[in-house]
Each structure stands twice: as structure tokens, then as C-alpha cells.
Image: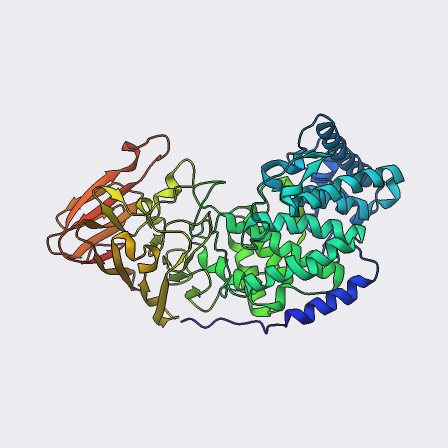
Length: 566
């Protein structure tokens, strides 16, 4: 397996002790802005964004946090006036809803936006204290306290004395994006209010849970995939807030944040504009690099202590298609330094052991061929039935999940993945959430990206499913991918080797050409290729794409894929 740099683990008990000692004194929400270059283009863009709001022209999703940060940078009173007015409006709107017997906006979508909303209140309360009256402070405190209490006590949640219980979705799942918002809200409010109840909850429960969880994900990334996994931008921001405020460095207590820089660099296509489409892609189906991915790496780079990894992050940030934030509401995150030119990794093969992903490429030039392969834990609701799936890219997508061409971006079934599909009487046998597949990675050549992978996907089905076993071997090198499958099923189960492609295939016997992708079926010798046009099933959901199905006798497939005919 590829060797990756590891951070020396700091015993979390020691971190807890340091945090406890630090927070015994008066807690304070601190934001270190010493890194901000006020001569930079990113600062000028952020200032223009905030000035427009101060002039009565706020952009979409403008936040009081933006105004409070600008006051911290300039000392100009107009920014605090704006921030205080916005938070007061949030609280007034919430109280109006509560008086009408309704939930306030902060409770919407299972409190998903509590982090930025309570964070804006806390940042304003800390930064603009001189502009906030005692009556406002009391009003804001009641609203924030009730929000935090409701988050962690879903069965007893209430507003204005009226019960408003909710599901408690992911309050105990540190791998879920909702959890980061909950911790963000709690941390911001606990620090600004010096509330020992919430500080203790963070120190003794919520932050240790994060550390324990991510210490088990060597190689970085998220079990939610690369769509919802972009929420790690909030996770890393939580680490930064805690470090600024308490001096305790959660990010370097394990290797996850550092490894995540490498994960995202290797998960990016050679054209540096798209990324590996793993799991739900609900924001935009086609996995194009966006502000959120830029912010994630900026946050991780800010926290990292390893110069080599920081240089790698700088190279990525300075060369990807998203070289600056495209939307104003993300502008403040571009204040984080991207560094100078940097340099790409030396390795061409990367193994994310914790999430079960392998990324390989023939080089770091834009014309390189790139491979992605999945075999590992299938535990999160936003993950897909993609155990054993491969993705191939060279200049553009060659073989890729049909999900990226769907309208919803949340097609999770095996039928849209590049896997062996198992059917009983025409009914697809689904991979099961809560399972763990495994793989062994060998034959790595970091000079040219060659790699061999042996994966056992049997656990994704279970013995009672009719799929007794399924092993997949991958050999990648010389711009060719060879996929070899062996399986055992009950007599009433049929196995179908499937490849989802963006270009219409032309079939010739046991070979097919789909755009630049050439496909040759080696085994079985009686293999028959059929083509499905996805739009024929549902033109509104499946906007493009085709699937090649390979059927034949026996219990094995061997298929070669390359970007040119042999």
C-alpha cells in the first residue's frame, strides 16, 4: 500500500486536560485574523461584498458574521451596526414565530443551519459588545440557549413553552454533516457566554467523539462521500475556532485533516476541474469543483503543520478551476492564505484506507488517465451501493456512475455503478448499508501510477442474499484497466457485468467503443453485450448516459478497458 505521512497522535486525555485548564478561566470566542493580507485581491473582494451590504445592498446569503469580521479588521462602526441589526432581525423573526406557536427558522431541516445562525449571533456578541444593550443581550441569550438545548435534547425540545420535539438526527453521529453544524453552534455559544454546561458537553462528549471517529479514518475523506463530505470545511473550521479560543489543537491530534488534503488532491481529475463522484451529489449532479471544496482545503491547510502537505495544498488551490470563491457569501473564506505556487505530490497512487478508496493516475499532466476504485465501509445514508465500483477518466469521463447525469444526484442503486449487478428473476439484489468490504493494494509503482487491487465485496450482500461471494481484481497501468471478477451465487441469481458510459456505445461482438473508451470482454467467451439508454427509463431524471451490460455463462468476468483500441 502507498506510504502516507502520519501525524504523531496526541493522547486525547491530555488534550482534554489542557482544554479544561484553559476554559476554567473566562471563556472567550476568539478569531485570529493575523493571517489576513489587507492588500490582497481576496481582501478587496470581501470588503466590497460587505460594503455593498452596509450600503443597503446585501448579496444572497450575506451574514452578520461577514460584517462582524470586517469590523474586527477595520474598526469601522458601520459594520457593527449592520451585524447587530441583522442578528436582532434574526431574533425578532424567531420570537414572532414562537409567539405564533411555530418553530423558528433555526429549527428548520432538523437544525441544519443552527451552526452559521448561532455562530453569527455569537460572533456579533463577541465583536460588537459595546453596541448591544443589556436587553438585547438577554433576548439573544434566551434564543441561543433554547436552540442549543433543543439540539441536544430532541425529545424535550420546546419553543415558548410549547413542545417541539424532533428526530435528533445525527446528534450522536460525528461522521454526519449535521453533527458539525450542531457542534459549531454549541461551541460558538459556549465560548461567548462562558457557559460551563455546554463547555463541559464539548470537552467530555462531542469533541472526544469527533477525535475517536476521525482517528479511524486514515487517508482522510468522508464516509458520506465527496458530495456531503465537503461539509468537512465546517469540521476544520470548528478545529480552528477551538484552537484560536482555547489553544488546543484538535486538528493535529490525528492525521485526518492532513490526510484529507492529500485525499482531495488525488480525488481531483487530471483536468483540475472535477472530482471523484462518490456518494450523493445533491447540490450539483456533475462533480465540479466549487467554493466548498476550495474552503475545505484552505481550512485544512491553515491547520496543518507539515510543510510538504501545505505545499501540495497550495499547488492544488492555485491550479484548480475554482481559484477564487465564485459567490460572495463564501468570500470571507478566501481570506485564508492559499500560499504560493506549491508543487504536486510525488506519488501517483493514493490509498484512503479508512474510507476504502484508491485513486491512481498515469501522471500529473492534464492528459493523464485517472482511476478511482471503492471497497470499504458502507455505513452512511449519503453513501451509495458502489462497493467494487470503478471510475475511469482521461480528458473527460470514460466510465462513470450514471448518477452524475441524473437530475437528482442521489441515485444510490447498484444499477448506476460500474459493478457486477446481481438479479433474481429481474429484481436487483441491493448492497446492504452497515457492511464493510475489504481490499488489498499491491504492485504500486509511484512513477507511473500502476497498481493492483484485490477486493472482497462479499460482505456487501451477505450469505442469505443469494450472492455467496464476489471478488474483484483490478490491474491498472499503461492507460489500461483490467477488471477480473469471480463470484458464486444461488442457482436463481444472474450476474451482469455493467459499465456506465457518457457516450453512446457501438457494439461489435465482444467489443464496444463508447467515445474514447474501448471495451473488450475476454471472459466469458460467450459473452453478449447489450446497451441501455438511460433516458428511455426516465427522461426527466436521467438526462444522458448509457449502460453496457455483459451476460454470459460461468462464474467469472474479465474485461479490458482503455482509451484506444488494442
